[in-house]
Length: 141
Image (cartoon, rainbow, N blue to C red; front, side, top):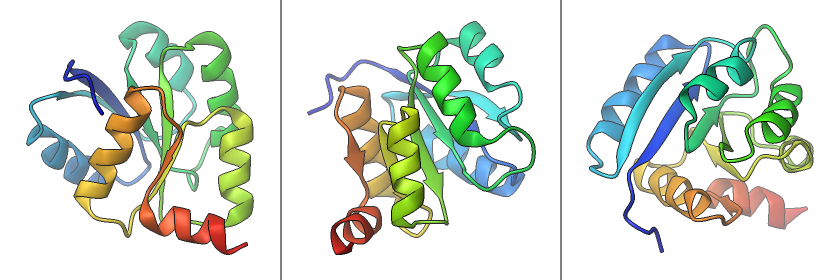
């Protein structure tokens, strides 16, 4: 169960419409503060060192730096920032790569807002968490 402390979220997604929709959705939650948006993982570690977000929502299909490399670097340099992959691409090999690189959660962009919030809160509490579509994909293989 989430402790109730305010969490800060940094979004990394190359689609500005997705980022804006996330900002609006997360603004409805009193325990989540929006820390901003990056259009690629190129500056993720530098930005996270400066902002110290609780959660980084990261897409895996973007131009620029390989997002899994960025997750690994972030885990080394900013261990308090926990990554939740937020992607329309949900395949076992991507989930495995995310976990191996240091991600704490994985949410499909097809899952609903409530599922996203549950995963964010679980990860903030130190749990590895998947949304329903991701769990189903992972368990199926």
